[in-house]
Length: 329
Image (cartoon, rainbow, N blue to C red; front, side):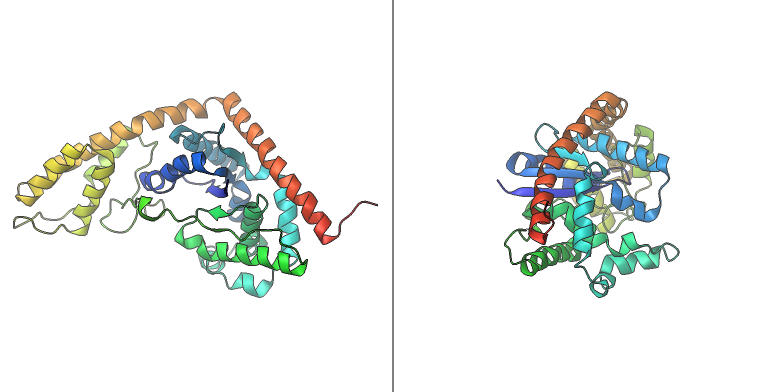
């Protein structure tokens, strides 16, 4: 069975875009592949979170993924910081990662612009830690967004460089997991682009009903169609895109028909959309709160996940140390 490794950012709540983009595919993936899903809490240190923020963020995002259906009995779910073998491989890979190639990465350049007063070594070597996370489990597939494709290419480079330097065929070169037509892109409420935290246009899975109603009612539309079967503007098309994933087909067809006949009232559309989003997210929100409050369950999940992840990682480290030449006397 092919091995899939995917890191989960430890900051930011899940929104509808995350859910229909990555999470629903994780739910399918965990049954078809040997999956390692980890909370990337080491990576978050590049922005200097406080101890309380770090812990609360990890607990929240872990609760949300479990509430969405990630099954720790099937997939290996763990915290990056619970697997010290990762940092050892990170160190070893750093010895053969060159400053020039690291400073040229797009993500490093962007972070330098975003946080000029905090350009730390962790930012520079982010692709090396990402590579260690992946190849320590000998992953063959990695679900990555467009912004991480260059870093995945560097992972392949580091794996290839290790194999070449030590004349072995040890690390596979992982490829991007292509969801293809299965990937649903959820637009934001501001009339353009995708839904995202930084864009300020997101509907979060843990938003309360009153928050959802307020956000949806403020969503951008237009002045309405002036002729039958008029092509929709992007803002209106965005609302229908969201409706298609949370509402019944009959509801979507009803409002589409009203639009095509120039009889649509956007206020009615928004009210219906808000209620359908609430119906969809309420069970998830309630499950998140239940899991978040169950420290015994969360502790069991991460403890079991760490044991499974370390079993895989420690085998790799033993073999890597022997390949490099670290041997007992």
